[in-house]
Length: 324
Length: 294
Image 1: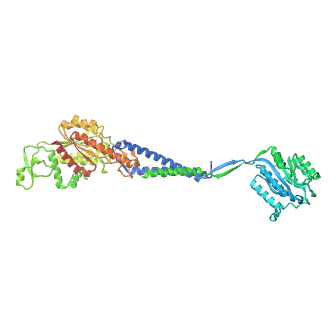
Image 2: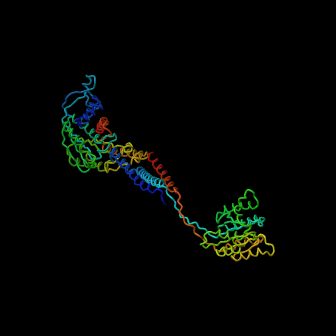
């Protein structure tokens, strides 16, 4: 236990001792002034009633002295404000998952459903860090990697409402129309891959990449390059395609890129998709990372206050009997 | 400077007035008269005189009873036996030092004796030493004796033990005396009882106990400590009602025991707590002694 003002105890204790001694001296001097010499007090002191009363008296004096000392020490320690210092090393277990959602026009009819899928995924990923990025012609981060699930769910709610056309939430899409074209898949994936922090630590990093891969415009980074970037950074990309009908070149390209990053490709209708992504992500070894340890200081007056309370009760109890 | 004897006398006058003072003298005279056949004179009867001393013929001629006075042929020897241990320097029931009460009682009896023409001596002492003073009949001598009691009784003196003095008297004093024992307020042990049995045969004994202050009644503003060992009796303990009750019972038991022991030896005794009680108490003491002798 640390003290905020150790000086209070350092000065207070000797001072209290000096005052106690002065009071004691005064009492003694006072007692010397008025004394009555009695003879044959053995007639009194031999009595069993006297012995009993004397024991009681001694006990009361002991309680009084003990309580008084305790009260004084507790009051001084309390006045010095004891601190409770805990060194916290927050541990984040961790797999990082970025939900990457294509909100281009071609995806509009699936987005609400995809958000629902994300929500299911988030439920399964409890404990992991999750971030979300949406992209159209440019990518915008909805929320960065975090393990605050209340916040995540709140944001997903907002996303669901915005994607289902709530006019109050136009601002949700802000920052997604800055590129050339409309649906720049490669840029989106590259942004998602770049969304991971602490790239120097070994962590399981995954991107859940929901897109139909309908490219409309000229991206800065092509899908292949984005895939290479992901591979370079050890990010696995799980593709989630809502719009695959039969043989589809774009879907095939997506599948090859995704599988090139050691991820997996699913169609959205695939009932095994969610399960598959969850299992695949969880199969990767979670790395426990230690955040920077910090020491927390909090006033912890409970002990001195409790001690002072008990001591006060003792003082009052003992002195009440005394005066009676 | 007011002498100790003057104080005794003034006590006698203030407390009783001239009339009862003569009563007290009459009481003493009738107890310790040395009767002879030589008729001296007649005087008024005062309560306390022996009825057989009344001169009935003279009384018949007179309006009030008259008493015959004889010339005392034999002088009584009164021996004051006073405890001068440190216990007697402690506080008495009335708040004075116990030795004041002792001096008042011894002084009064000595004064009455001296007035009666008797000789007064003193044996004083502590547990370890005994001092005997000469037996004489002058007021100056009385003053000397009272001074001796006063100066030798101090708080840092020796412990009290009256056995030493009584034993000394039993071994040393041959002549028949009237002993006035002024004792500390403590239980009479078998040793004292045995000495009293022996002394009673030879002497007439009057016993005065000087009462101790009640430690359970001394105010809480003062610390009470025992003179014997300096032990301070904790104030809250001695003022405890249950302790007070038990102490009162214990004192009553001790008083009863003392009375029983002294009664068994047919020794008149009185308990004194203050100097104000001395005159009536000594009167009662003489009265009881006279009755006990019959």
